Image 1 (cartoon, one colour):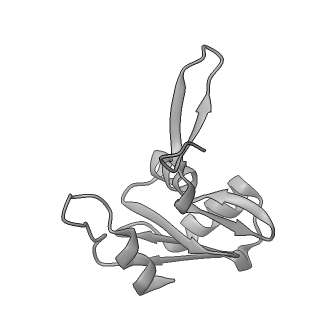
Image 2 (image 1 turned 90 degrees about the vertical axis):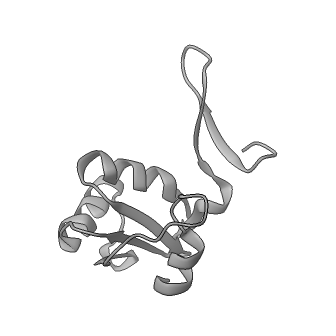
Length: 111
C-alpha cells in the first residue's frame, strides 16, 4: 500500500493500478479481503451494488438485484462460507457531499 492509503498492483507492463484503499479491507477468517475488489467484481455482473463489512462479515447492499444471487456470487467467486456473507436490498445507495458512495453512513446503518 502507498502512503496515501491506496492499494496498488503493478501489471506485467509496469503500469500501476489502484485497486482499493487500506481502510476498505477487512479480515474474514484470518484472510485479508479488499471490499473494493469484491464490489468491482459484483458490479461487472450486476449493477448498483456496494460492499461494506467488518471483520468476518461481508455485507453486499443492492438497490435492485436479488440478494440471494449476490450472496451466492460472493460465496462461489471467493470460496467464503455463506455464514460470513450478508446481502440485502436497500432503497437507495447514499452519496456524500462530493457525490461518492457514503461508506461511513452505510457502515453506521448496516454493519
